[in-house]
Length: 212
Image (cartoon, rainbow, N blue to C red; front, side):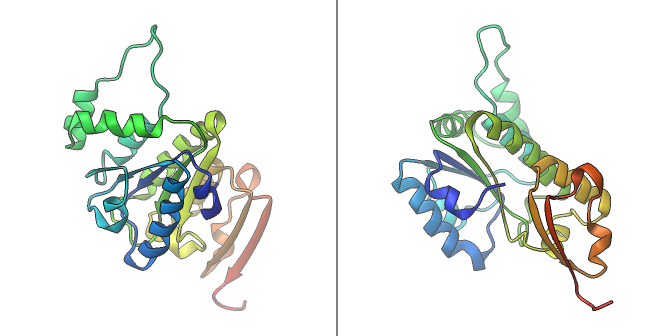
């Protein structure tokens, strides 16, 4: 996972989905620091918002094709032996211009760490399955470029539940996908949300709403 501080040194930031209005101001300020440092900012969201208006590129992509588009943007360029991706088909499924897709991919392909920023609260574009797919894509990218996945508003179980990650199996998949090192889970019967075994964080705080 990544933090807000990682945005300042990021070579590129991919913002996936809408940013809640309450968090727009701080997010814009952090992303401006990214751009001042020479990093690029690309936004995939149904609505442009303040973050999209200040980005290097904004693509109007929502819900179903979101994870596929994000994974394609983050994937390394194909070698001479590999078949180039069908940009036209992907653009048609996502409902966006193919040239804009190529421009966004080029913007993200620079040097330096790549951070994926996803809001888990107030984000109608991202479902639980999408969040898990994004975490997998971020893990792959982190191995080659550094950076990672920054979850905005995911400090407790309620935020993740709103993103569709609300049952023990979902949490187990999420922990494995993001290689979570630390977590503070807040919720009713929060212990039931803790992943066991391989998926359990190295440092874990579990806080129940009710003292039991």
